[in-house]
Image (cartoon, rainbow, N blue to C red; front, side, top):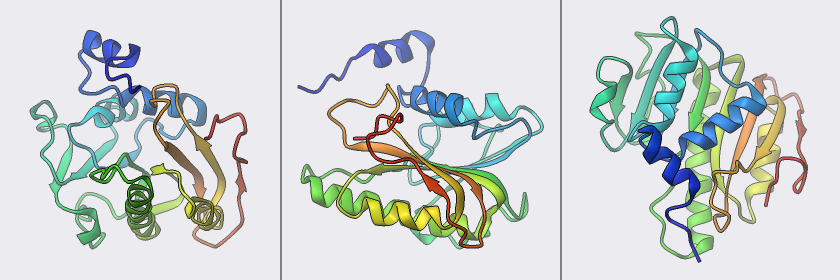
Length: 211
């Protein structure tokens, strides 16, 4: 049975966080060090802003935080982040060019509106990941990092192989804050090469607790 009010939900409420998903990002960053002070970060699927709040704290005042979502951000981020309300699949890649030509980190916690049909939801999730990856190929700097949420499915291994051609290292993570019944996991691409160099993927069932 799905646990809606688990310990991460209660912790988020207690600490005034916008959503429990912040603890997923926090654990991934602790393990993989994807952010650094002063980074330029693009947050895809940012609303309401749970990840963005963590990102702002890590990159500090010298960093740049940009965000995209179909829904509005929480008002607490007014003046703290540069926001565009649009569909990522309609992005040209130059929406933030006046601020920076490239990003150091691109993260995506995007998920489709679930239908309850696992295969359909997995296909839609993969399409969002592919859109984020295509965008990253245009605006992620060499050496930059990419983080994508994906619903694991039959086509996931093929997509992971694509990523290994563009990153020095690819890791598959399922943070403790993920609900155990969920098929979601996170792909962490470290060191964007943009040269088709093969990376080293973490095998399924490894230390990253992949499903």
